[in-house]
Length: 165
Image 1 (cartoon, rainbow, N blue to C red):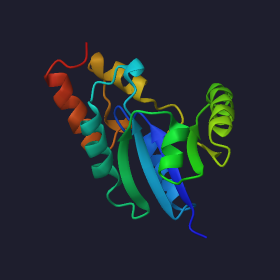
Image 2 (image 1 turned 180 degrees about the vertical axis):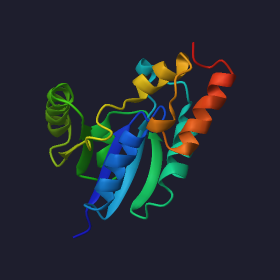
Image 3 (image 1 turned 60 degrees about the vertical axis):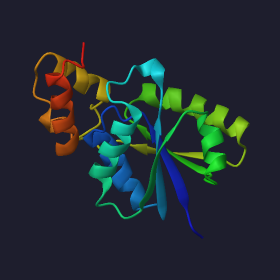
């Protein structure tokens, strides 16, 4: 049985935390689609095209990552369209879990064939979030430990262009 899963997120920018979940998911599923949300409520500093390209570069070595796409729809609708019935969700804390179980229930109601699989973040990266990284970067802190080199370079370029306010 071919197991295809979607790993959704904003990836603004992609961090070692995201990469941890993606890498571990490739050991479980035959095919991974990374779905990058065009979520304007989060006010991303990278546009959707940039986030897709960064994610592509960072995951190039992972052969099970079959597709990277942007979306501007309900996640359950995207899963149905992509004929995927598994969502991969990374969980760092109990607060993440509380949010994720509610989201899983809503997605299941919209698309009954959709199941959510929760992967706990590895302890080495469990504290990393894109929001924290951007905040550290805004105040000229060292962000290198949190980002793959491609994302690190891209974020520094954004900083030099005054894209983070």
